[in-house]
Image (cartoon, rainbow, N blue to C red; front, side):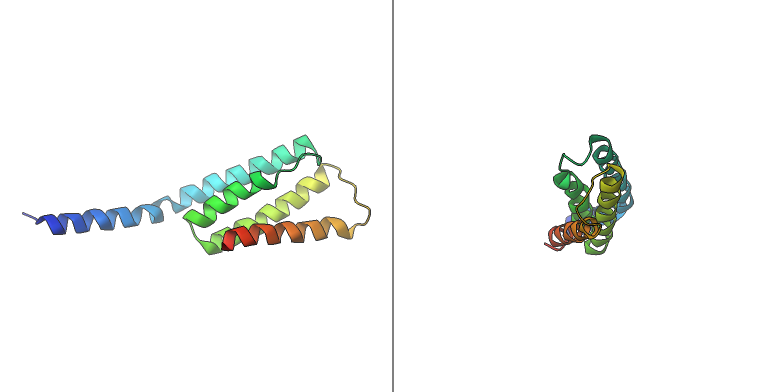
Length: 115
């Protein structure tokens, strides 16, 4: 027969393992959300801002899985936004502007990820 403290210790250990077990699911859901958001961004054009929507899966993955995966999602999110901007036909006054905006978006995502 196990004692009550030993039983509580096993329960606490099992609860501590839950985040590790759900990490792949969170990464999968975050990836699907990020892809879906960029698709919606392409379909709606460049006039509607989607920064908050890109931020949701990035912050969720960073919070749940960790800083390294949050940084990876930040880079992918900025790249997808760059592709969405290009695919939506957004015309800039200079070709360097699209890259500048992507670097600024990446910085925005990274700041939120690291906070």
